[in-house]
Image (cartoon, rainbow over all chains, first blue to last red):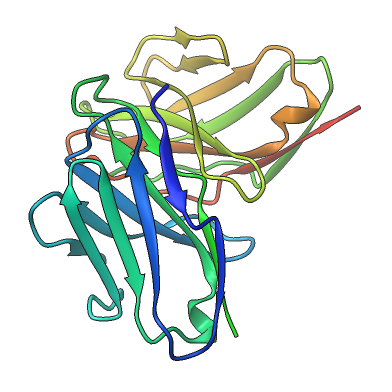
Length: 117
Length: 110
């Protein structure tokens, strides 16, 4: 199946700094990528939908100025957590759909664990 | 998208079939049933999907009731590596996004 990668797999940063997380579709093109957040023992919550070449669509309650999303190409979307605080510590997961393949499968990345100290 | 209801947790003996139920009584005619699973600290993995017919692939079988208000995911011979949280999701596909509920935590025991 198609592969989605994320980098880094884990990151520790100090409060007030910014962190960028990359999501790449390795062997397919994706017009749309999705960013999810998962707190311990909870389910995945959609944060935003990232569309190549246009502005991201954010879910209610997600601050667009804090979670900057850029989808500059059909294989790369980035999520930047600006001025991170301890409450932003979470597991961030991206997903993508293959334009050319089956329209039903959504491929998920392995996730990035962010810890803000 | 329609809401789904799943048991919080289930146990299964290794080598036996694991049957995971899901209720989706408000499902619309154009909505598919998807199953994903998430092994601890990993991203979700696609398992199977269906519209109204039963489906089978190398991982599992999906049985959808005739009225489409519920479905069952069957892992025919569960192994320890099948221990994970299993999510049943209903989506019209056109919207692309997937809404995750609480899922069922399946524990496969030796």
